[in-house]
Image (cartoon, rainbow, N blue to C red; front, side, top):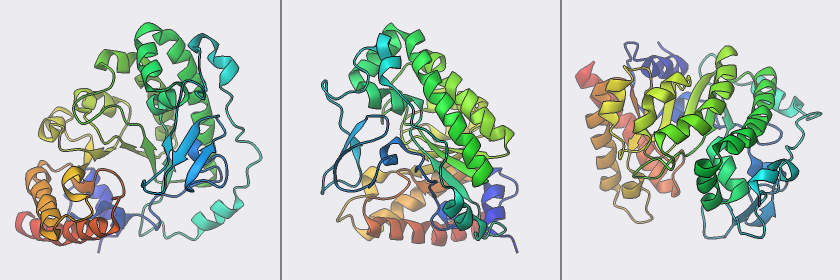
Length: 334
């Protein structure tokens, strides 16, 4: 009998898969694990992930109101890290990754059942998100158009940090997969034109993902927005899984254009299901719609596009229906 690890990889590669269900079941618990610095600028200071306001090790200001599901950058004209792009080197100073205590994490990973499950490391805050976190959204978008060379210089510095981080992750944790996070658009379009994205964002991910691929690590890139215009570029970057692919993308066309080289993890419309009082049947119907519409493509796993649902009840119903209806669909089509 196939392990959950094997089932996931066969479906990801469209290699005569015999399973269709909740992808997170194929990972160790918790499916997304942290290292000693959290691999997230938001958690480089303590205590991380608590309600209130705090400033991280990059100098980025964050706020987490009691009634919100997560912390968000709180950028103003007064507190933004980079007030003048020409002087970014005076404002941005990467936190040290040296002399970190990896032993607790090495001990945690050592006992994981790697034969049955996949091990993932969470490495969020990609290049585009970093730029608007240190500059503010408006300044970042304007600067990509007016001074792309200096934006590239700034992002190259950040990528150097991410590469050193990647080396440590691979040396100490040895993950099967990294979950990398960078939202490149909204529910209608990319934030940058494809040409600007290729000029200012793609080169840095080429460096970062190229390193992980050399270390034998699979790339799961989260971007719950409309990215279908750059699907081929995602393949060129070495992305194995596009996690968070919202149904506002032309998913069928993406699979066709990428010739099955980019596994789609998503398809479920969280705007419909992740609400406090949505009827259970609405949630189950949306799962069935996604499976019926996209599973025949082969390179697809039904998945909630936001990684985790805001409302636990939603997540429980989604997971249950993905497994139950996924098994039914496979029984009829395999």
